[in-house]
Length: 193
Image (tube, rainbow, N blue to C red; front, side, top):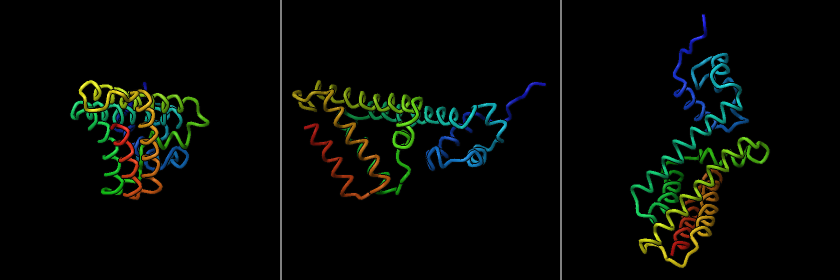
């Protein structure tokens, strides 16, 4: 009789993603994962492979649901300049008002694993390139409407915004001081004229 999966793999993957997000890759044990996912080790290995392949699947899930969908929603709901600034404001709000210290799983992973894991570096690199594209497209759209000055180089501005955003994400974990974080957001706004 063939093995039949007795759990919701999407819910289990979401639980694994949250476990990795909370503790990082190295600090999350297989015991942590099976407990959080509500499955046994045999089911975990049969469905997701090893810890590394589970982490890659969880990271891709995070990228799709927490980065791609989030940025698409901002682009749809806000003017170009407001969409950019809202990315910064929302991070600051989460850190200062809600006390969220988990940061961004992509940024956390960039710091923990990307330097020595090419597969993970590729996923993180692609996601961060897409954040840069979001900024560049919003700058160009704002220039087309006159909301952002036309003299700015959209690509260079997007790269600078990405650097500020990455710094902001790191600082929300280590120094979530409102004045510090808001200074970064003010620099992002200043870049946009």
